[in-house]
Image (cartoon, rainbow over all chains, first blue to last red; front, side, top):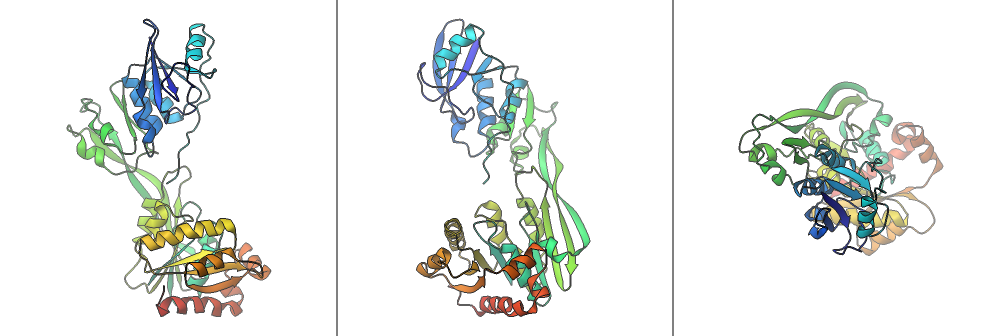
Length: 120
Length: 279
């Protein structure tokens, strides 16, 4: 089972990113093997629709679980269509969130926001 | 002559000046391109003789023809498309109706449908032809409506006043693109000057002849005037900060029609614009 977490830097004890679409990296964590890797989020520099592009990316990476502090409605539509479960991050570091998930301490993310779409 | 009336900040008096210039001109056309909050029609109270829906094209996929190549998803610069569980998802609010996805699909699986984003209304107020655009709430961009409004300009229109949206973004660029002259309205606040500088840069990039009208002028320091003097920008009028003017506007009335003593002020602005030597 693959867990994806938006993170501010490529370190397990680094902070979870407050933005899903524009997070610099994603942590890809394999629960069976306990292997972790960090991938660059190419959607971060999009002028618009970053959440959509990032969501497509994590779907293509084969994510099963997404742990994130918040999520916009466009990204959520894609992630839910792909059958990925969304959990609300509640700790600061990526590692602590994985431990919390394993202990079944994370709740489902239900407060999907309307997005932070800039006008241009 | 097409005169665009614009300002960086909202509430400086674009509509006030544009409406009154149109009202003192003989047989003019007033175009309200501030499609997110059009309010010129509230002053003109024009009868509506013509109304037209403005539509844009939104793509959709014929799933039996789609082989999942994702050429459209890769192509879309706005990230309006996603492909999940062998289905194309279209985010209509993000789509800019460029039509590129239709062109790049190797299987002809993408078709387009119309989506209404707003309306244009045309009417008459004395001898002013009034055309206003209304963008539906929640729509991302008013540019298709502005393009449509500007197409309503006729060859025989001698004086066209384009009431622009505030700011200096794409919709403003669209509004001033074909203007012969840009009239910038500035108010005496620090915030106003900051945005005046942005609009000054915009009209300079577009190489448009331009001048400034200082609105709401009082005896106190006017940072907008200081900016204009420092930048050697031509000031063609200083409209006083007055209770009489404010009340007339607040009541939805056109100043030059209610109080004829103000006609020369606006006639003079027109004469100054027509004089040339703008810079």
